[in-house]
Length: 375
Image 1 (cartoon, rainbow, N blue to C red):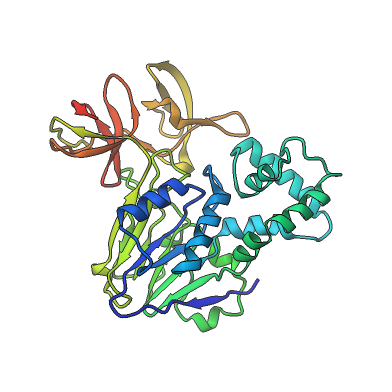
Image 2: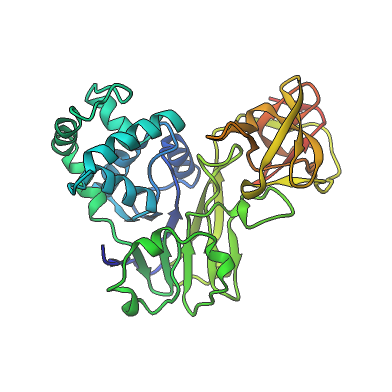
């Protein structure tokens, strides 16, 4: 599919809210919009990956469609939408087998997603789907979900708003004319975009790659603003990271300078108020996705003492952060043993809690708090 570009026509002084990588977490999306006091006078920009990994993919798509019927909503395609549409709509040889294999894989690994939501609404068992049943199953899906499929198929790859370009993965140039005949996939799934050295005259705003993967000193989920290179990366790891959040950028005007853009986030974790102060302490180890293999040594009170294989160092990790891969090897989700700097009265989003303290977030940064707190 060629790269399609859509222009965002905003009025002077009209507020623009941009978010990405909702991943089926409708509660987070609605909570974030409520927090920002969003209304139909605003422009809402969503930069891909609406679905999968979260519990309400189909409801998320329908909610966005409902908003779009009564307000200015601009949505670009993510690599997840691209792939799910390909799996669902492909009619080339072998497409039925690829569909069935993907459904079984997703049910096993995630247990939820857009196509699984569609099957559930049609009362079709994903685990019992046979190759013989697949053609009729897909036909029912095409017919029953025609509006949702049509909405997703017409999404552009790039959104253009004067000096701001929104694209899920990232682009190599802000000369959009040179991209119109290119294959959109490269711009939807552009891994490690920030580390490729690009600089732009117009600001490129991306999602796709959780910002915590760019940071190696602390577990930080705040958007990254590269002012000199004119890049903003905003994926807060919603649905992908154990402590993930949904980030939003708020533009006071379509011609706002990068320095005028503020950000906000929402997650669904319980929140407590710190009663004690605590000095911050840098991490001794920060385990990230690409170097996450561990050995389990012992478990106690919901914590597991692990040996990080590449560094040969040990640390205690919340048990919920551990998972097995297909080879039955243990991994740890992005985790840092840093201690938060806390003032009495600070509000902390609690990701994990035991008798010793709580592992949570202040302003998008994760770490431990060992003081007293109130609900």
